[in-house]
Amino acid sequence: MPRLQGFILSQCLLACVCLMLAPSFAGACNIPVFRYALERWQSDLIELVVFHDAALTEQQNRIFAGLEKESRNHGGIANLQVITRQIDDITDEDLKTVWKKLSDETKSSLPLLVARSRVGRGQWLNVWTGPLTKVNEIGLLDSPVRQELSNRLLEGDSVVWLVLKSSDKELTESTIQMLASTLPDVAKQIPIPEGIGLPGSELFSAIPLDIHFSVLTVDPSDPQESFLVNWLKQHSPTAFAEGSPLIVPVFGRGRSLEVLTADILSPTLVKELSIFLCSACSCQVKELNPGFDLLIKTNWEFELYGEEPPEIPSTASASEKNFDEPILLPIPRGSDHEESSQNNELNKVSIRPGSVIDQPNEPLPPLGSHRLSWLLLMFLSIVVLVAAVAGIKKKPYDP
Image 1 (cartoon, one colour):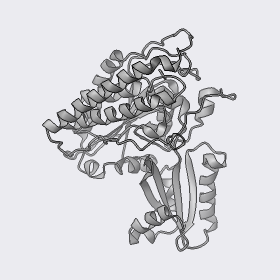
Image 2 (tube, rainbow, N blue to C red):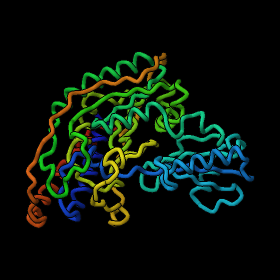
Image 3 (tube, helix red, strand yellow):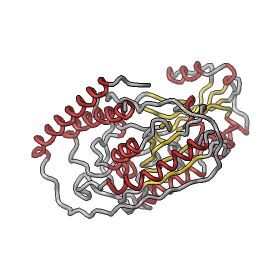
């Protein structure tokens, strides 16, 4: 299956990069990706850019000040950053480009807010654009689905599979049922990596380390979810408009691995993605991992650690390590389906929790003694990569 091969190839490329970088870290990491992300990765800031041509009115200033107050930069807990720019004095080249690409009709609704999400190093996606005064109507800062998502991740769900329902009721329901029937078997097959508790693989929160999945549906007609729905639609607008539900595996502190369409989703792909997110975190640098962060109003540090958070060793960023940008192939998006309608509910499908593995607190041997192992792993990764490339060449990629 060409699309699945494309995903496997992207993970092989990522694995090769991470294996080559691994000797630069103090020790191997045995923590599953989802748990490492929950405890150690800060959520990316969502940019809220307010374009205006005159001084803001009293009402507009209240809205602007309310957004700033909620941001982490001003003592709040939401992962957002508020920026204001007068349209005749935009000096940032990046924001100049954002403004120029807006339609004339959109530009007429000043002051205008553009919400931007980081989707890669140096890459951004406009996830919502509209009048500043509409912010409180669309559920920008928070919504019931994102509250539930945050609760589940903090209760120990490894991955929450968001499903944005489409106009095709039958296709949406079959997608949900496929996830509900596949995830329990996948959870049983994934072991927790060995070595938890060893140096470099410490757990810092009291949340049980289990393998546990759930499904959470999003109703596109719910006005409280307007901001989230528009955000997810931006990743595959044509497919969603033609009837495909969108499926988003979310882990960590609300990090979305990818936005998938129903035609690409299969039990095999669900298993591959689940294994990737539940395997040992071979690449600890967040910027070198796929995905994007949702805007979630949660005090993660307090919820995880309470009043006195532990001292967690910081993970160097890609820029600090001067790593080259990895070449990652995105999961392909496909064609879509017929239209129908779907009802509204938060639908949770709970999956069997795995067992907590207690590991002896023994020190790791010196990194130098593992150099042969690293070479072998790198060699095997290259072999797998070459095999994946050869497999794709045999059958042309079908966009």
